[in-house]
Length: 173
Picture (cartoon, rainbow, N blue to C red):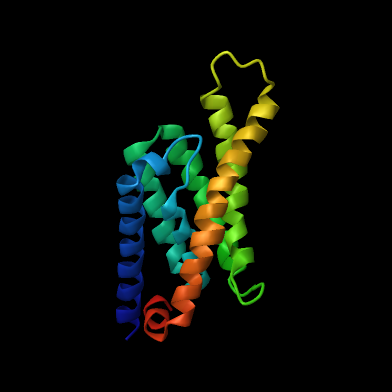
């Protein structure tokens, strides 16, 4: 029986990773760049249902960045997703009004900070005389807004749909 559980968890991780990549590739104009709403980031809330989803989401992020971004983003973007998913997992039982809102905030925070700095340093605005710290803050806000849409709106909705449907809940837990 334990073998079947492990195989199921591994299969779920693979499906999540593949879904993350497919969503990024299919919605490429939204998934990459300084202004982005990476719909696949909604999957960062799946660790609410178990730690095994961390591996699936992180692998999906790694592969999507490998296919569509820079090597620095492969490293830093994947790191941001790993940190976000671990903290999301830790917040899995915390709810506001029955919603997984606290669990949606780590991806917003980690991506805003890490990717905001990455964009400011690697892709500075041509001709801009703004100080680096201001570019980091500006890019962080831009990335954070996209993450709020992806995680706090779409991700929380995804968790609510799964938790509200007995058949779906059985699949994800």
